[in-house]
Image (tube, rainbow, N blue to C red; front, side, top):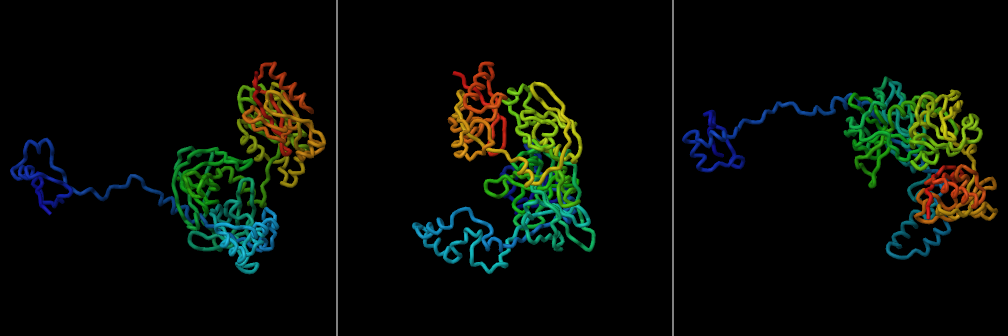
Length: 529
């Protein structure tokens, strides 16, 4: 290592030639004194970089230390006996499977047959392979995350984490394990509340106001991915109000903090250490994290969890209408300037809506003080209304606004809902300009399409590919109940309604279509010669 003296005449410092390369002429110049070149280009400083500079980003350590004790791992066990007894049917015909087993030949056939001989040919139809032990010795394990929301031991998680579990165990961050009781679950929002009993108050966290969350806010997620408890990831809120096809209460925060299998039921925190959402789903073509996760917003979750804590069930208001969104074509057909509101496609018999006088084709514009811009506005507002409350609802009907007062009822259970919405199915007819073939509802047509005698309208027997009807999703077996707001009972009535709409210069014709007992309005474009 060569030793060079600084231009200031200070102490000698070692310089690695690999770091700074100097020519022999430059070395000579340094020995003689400062040259004109040095004056223009001062020597390279060799002072070490200070080691006590504060980092630019302080990190999340203090926040994690604060909230981590309240985040728990949730493990479950499900007894396999029901599956071994064949109580869960495998879809298929066992006799057909036996024939396939005997006749199967080709690459891998011998290995497959040996496997099936060992574990039992009937196994696929019993839900589980045989040969792994007698009944009672086949528990199936699951894992997820939760968080303590009260010092008394109440814990929030996802419904799908504990659904069907025979045993639920909660493990605290400090290693303590508790057997948990499932206080209540709600499949509609995928939420569940557990309860554990501890000798001392448990550390807990609080909910934030998720309505104040903004896209771009930093967040952290803590969970139990792949059984690795106490895992922390960070990111931002990528979007809000996401609809992912999760049902009536489809409204999620999207986050890019990595979450994976096992994070379900875990919290997403803001930088104040409050829960803004409960992680519940990921979008992934591979099953692993790709940076798109979804969390139930805290405000929605807290309402459901409070109900579950109180009595194990969720009380929701009920109006009794099947609704659909509006597109520009539907809005135009109904005389609306904007494609906003909730279109009533069906009114449930004996429901609060039926008693109040709602009609098929009404567009709900506001519910109490809540303007209805899309379907979620209405479903959320009705669900949050206490049964027995009277609410003024503004609807668009026959070209003008009307106000209807409805007394909200209690949301029925699933069995009761099935009884209340027991409508019928479709049959046939022939209509020009739409791209469909239609037929009357004859006894043969009803039998062919498995339709009840009460079904009224005209059945679609064929849909031309690429036609206006196909573009709007009409299918073979759909029943057209109304065309241009008039009830129809034969193909000619549909054709006449289409012709009248075309003569008025309309670009679409409004159809009321029934499929699988559910009604829906569809604005189908008119083809002109």
